[in-house]
Image 1 (cartoon, rainbow, N blue to C red):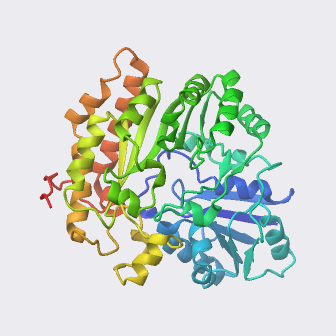
Image 2: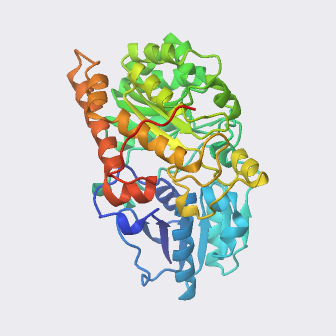
Length: 445
């Protein structure tokens, strides 16, 4: 039996076949859950085009919201030539009835615990239209992802190792809680260590949404990582700054960068987003504490929350530069299906664009409350242009005097962001701004 597993690109016509940061891990995970003896071909459309004439007994497509239109286009074409299609991932899980219009079956939620039955039903010619497990899967005794089926040479890294899923915080704009639940589910630490050892590497990325969420478990994990002599990056919230012991273990275990959802410098906006971990926290002091342990931070911000006015853009960049963030991401609030933000804006009639391909966190697809859509778009452009101006990069890069490796790495990361958000048609299509647009300071509210 031939299984074709596809991750569609957001904008396939603009990818030039170069190297991509990391693979969509749904591909090797689905392959690992497939029974032995099946001929499996994984296609990441960011690397290569999908061959619509490739023979396949089953086509599995996993997609996020921005890639949904492309996923539906591919599904329709495969079905038109007689190949059965099953769809899953974040977007089909949020809108299964929509996805079902383009697929023979839709898998809602996580693949573990469901995919073997889905595959068996298709092999027997008796697929069900919808699959949804009664309970979320436990993350123990999982097979290792089939990284051997990836085009490893085309990724900067394939060493992504997940140690947990779920998040109890329920930020209004975030898809994690609706998709993975409000309880943390942890993989056994010995199994995490076994997977890392199998990679034969000294560099790992942990895509957990909050690797420091449970401090006791995090400390146990970091202690287990120390003998491996790794360098690693992860994601977490600034509650880590409250625990010096945990920060010391993070540093000893090889943590170099953490991606942190700071979201807003406005307490009112944090409350509106239900970003509880950041409320009442001195964000600058917390960042200094993390920096003191040699751990750099990529700060993520969201513009367009209901309390935001046009002065939020300059205030945010002022903060990011004062805090000497290693890098920053600035996103437009995006109402992803399944989130509280989506339901609220839909109920209020404020969603203005239902073209999922524009749900890239760069386009304004709703009506903001305290500014126009154009002001929001231009304000985000201003933030990127100012933060990644050469003077700003120099001021923030050479704060790391005495550590040449970290200084060089920070410089490389900043110039990569600068090129991405000033680059031609990809920047325009994905992020909604022109490479030649001026970085004018927004009018104060």
